[in-house]
Length: 144
Image (tube, rainbow, N blue to C red; front, side):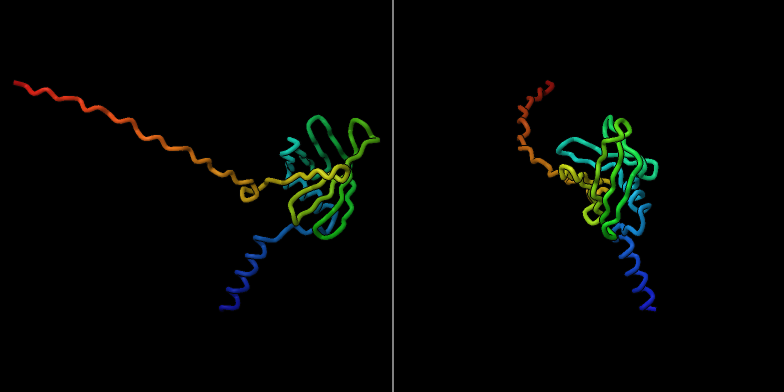
């Protein structure tokens, strides 16, 4: 009985904390769609993947026709073609270990903030506490 409970506990732990494994090109496109949007906060740019990863939007630019190359079980390269100019392509390295994608051209990193624990935590700023103003006592008049 203890062995069964221990096995269930281990299996649930592994399932909860496992990373995405790429077994096919469809896995890569599904990962991009489910983790979307990917954001580069320094450059104030966000990448959104839709239609099962077949479309990429970034501001006014739109891309389609993904070409996926699996590099390992946790890394892939995805190339998209521009809708506006067919000669323009963009390539991204998808990394599930780091939960990021990286532009191959300029090495810009875009992070997926799909989960609360991945959001950068803000440190509360301590404000100086001002003492409350002292109230003057009001004299009470006695009735005669």
